[in-house]
Image 1 (cartoon, protein in one colour):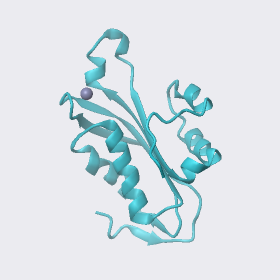
Image 2 (cartoon, rainbow, N blue to C red):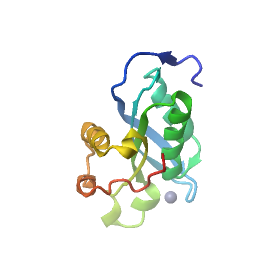
Image 3 (cartoon, rainbow, N blue to C red):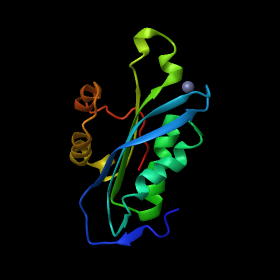
Image 4 (cartoon, rainbow, N blue to C red):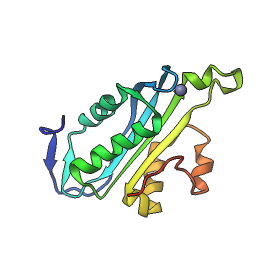
Amino acid sequence: MLNNALFTVDYSEMVIVKDIDFYSLCEHHLLPFFGKCHVAYIPSTKVIGLSKIPRIVDVFARRLQVQERLTNQIADTIRDTIKPMGVAVVMEATHLCMSMRGVEKQNSFAVTSAMHGAFRTSSRTRMEFLELIKLRSAVAGLRDAGGYACLAEEA
Ligand SMILES: [Zn+2]
């Protein structure tokens, strides 16, 4: 999938691709969940062609999924492919299985994140990323409390 899309560059600033639309199917309820995915990484020696990042999201979304696993798979793929200084993935999704359970939950959505490397070890890097993607929700409160990640994996 990525063989022709890796480039060696001298660039070590954060690369962000945000607001990637995705559409997936919850494996527990066989109902759709969909929303936005935000991806960032800090290259060490290689970068991925920018257009390939939505493609990675797509490949994993197009299966029966749980949002937490989907988030991890995207982050792990980027980490394993280009060995960056850090990679971060945040996904915000509306789950039909959630919204069908009552009016008061219709506008609720789930946020998951996976942080590796610098995004895990440096709160400044993490904040910069979160600031740049400006989540649309009350997640800001959690962010300030430093407990943003519903789901985070060891780097
Ligand atoms: Zn579900």
